Image 1: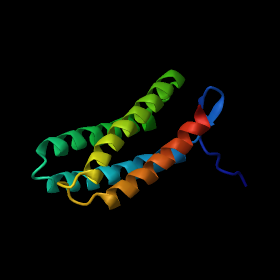
Image 2: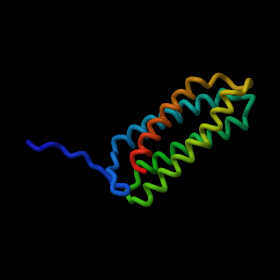
Image 3: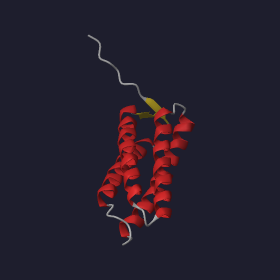
Image 4: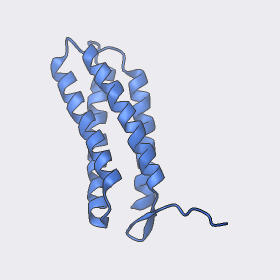
Length: 127
C-alpha cells in the first residue's frame, strides 16, 4: 500500500543518496583488506609498505566518516578529505606499479580505479 521511501541527506540542496555511500564504504573496506595483504608482500620495501598502509587505512577511515556524517558542512569537509585520501593512495600505488622492486600491483590498482570512479561519481553529483 505504501512505498518505502529511501532516506536522503542533503548537501547544498542536492539529494545525498546513502546507498551510494554505503556501496563506496563496502568496496573501500574490501580494498583496504586487500591492500593489507599486498603490503605484507612488500618485504624489501618496508617504507613503501608502511606509507601505503597508512594512506589506504586513512582512506577507509575518511569514507567511514563520510558514511556517518549528517551535517552539511561536515559532509562537505568529509568529501574533501576522501578526495585528498584518494590522491595520496593513488600516488603510493603508482609507485608500486612502476617500481621494479615491488610485487605486481595491477589487480589492486584496477580495484582502486573502480573505487575512485565510484567516489568521483558521488563527488560530482554533490558538488
